[in-house]
Image (cartoon, rainbow, N blue to C red; front, top):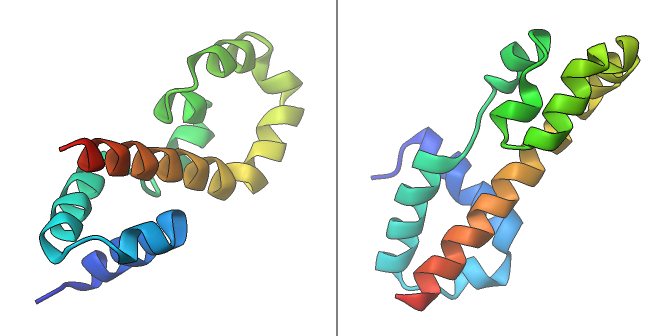
Length: 107
């Protein structure tokens, strides 16, 4: 039985990996979903954005330090990022999904 959160995860993986995900066996899909759930980032990015740590949250350390030491581009960059948070989050999660898929293919 799949929960609502599992359905959301599966939809994300289908979006990010498209036909690659659909071709996996049921056991590989389950394994991928389980690992992806552990490693994906969620809506906490909005809290981190408020405190200017959203780039650190997704592992973009160089961008974080530039952002932090320029005070978020004197708050201009900080405000623009409010509208880009969803894209930043999707890019991170897509990258994680592709990494996990690659590791799964090697096993």
